[in-house]
Image (cartoon, rainbow, N blue to C red; front, side, top):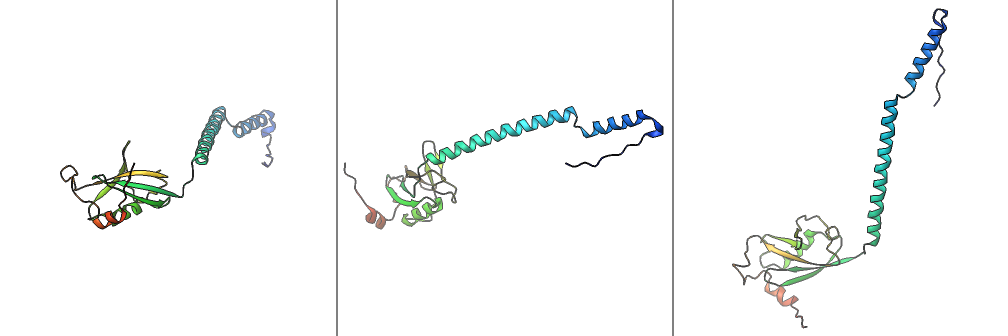
Length: 174
């Protein structure tokens, strides 16, 4: 930082006035003790926050490295009448894509429903959320609930088209 030299004149031939002017100039250029303390505290805070940031970033990176990479997810949708529909989805497909696939097999595709994961209950309400962001890989059991249909009052209600049941029907023998 280049500073131009300042020229001070002796007022009335008095050397004391020159010394006084020099001292005043020196005090105005030097930071005050309060400013120095504030600066030290600010730098300490920045360093501390930076260390926290670096540690958090390192932890997130380590977690990402440890996390397995999946290309597809198998989602099983369990209906209130115990029928299970299974589909394979790409990791970047959305909840909206899953809902659209379910609507294709429903007897009444206009019937409002919502998807959720129990224990702890997590509603899958964001249609733009990806399967990856919702941690639904590699496979997840998702439950479906219908807003206007009470499964206790209507235990024999058919949620899925009969042709879909016949087409996708499988039996598990243990």
